[in-house]
Length: 373
Image (tube, rainbow, N blue to C red; front, side):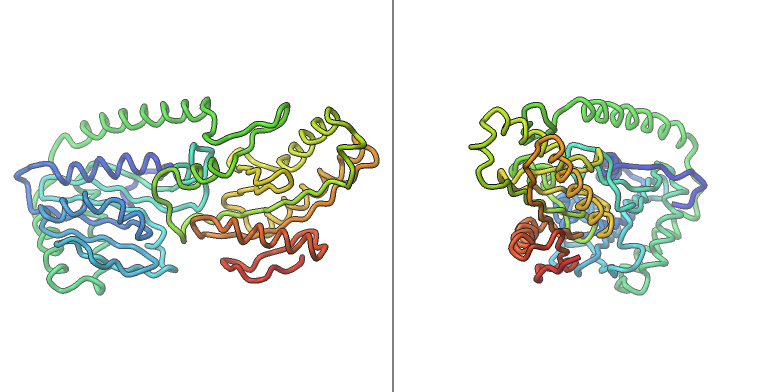
């Protein structure tokens, strides 16, 4: 949105709340038509989840247009015009919802930063930069922008219907008092967002298991809830680096050290494996010897560096536990696939251990045979 407002940093959770508010405004009974509604959903799974609502919007609006990247939207409800976006165009990373009539307007326009903040789930912590508001002139501006960008991809009747609404809106002055209603809405949204952040700061992660005296890990069910607890997550958006780690203890360690010492060693080992993690990262314990580090928004080189830090931290345990040197092997990939390709990473870790490779790299977005550093 180019209204002069300073852009805001917005989480997906807050964007969902604003989007739903605009959708409900579009569904409200009012004698201020015709109604134009336009939205960009990034990827088809996000639109599919909302199709029942958008079918109702399309049934009452003069024209309704939705766009997604990655595939052509097909078999949409009657009245819903789907537009395919190219993966490489900037509209593919845009999340927009615009509702416009001659007497009302609301618009949300946000751009995916491909970053996350610590949150209850990977999806809800995704970060966007953008603006939202309930002002008709701003909604008109954004509708004109999308009409220009999508013009050649709209069927002629749809394009004519869009132009008819835009012409009628332009002919009427804005409604006085919009800023008062918007100020009240912003107060409600900001307080709700603060309440969510407060709960997030104090609540534990679902599916977490804690090594006694050590850091918190996720188990596999907890990992699935964290990566897909919102009911939908789409491939092709947030890049996530995965580092699979396998730590093999020397033969006879339990017999030589005894149960109590082995327990302390296990705690120290988990601390070493998880030492490089940021607050947004997660560690998963797959087996007694296997771990998976989930690192949103990191590049492959950064993930390889994390794997190197794990190697160094585990090697340093020999200073605390003399005569015990663990064998560490790792595999690294960066993916936008959902669900995450955990099986591919585990296969690559097994290959690295078998071939004696300290850190293997998977081909990007592929399950091809891994390579050495």
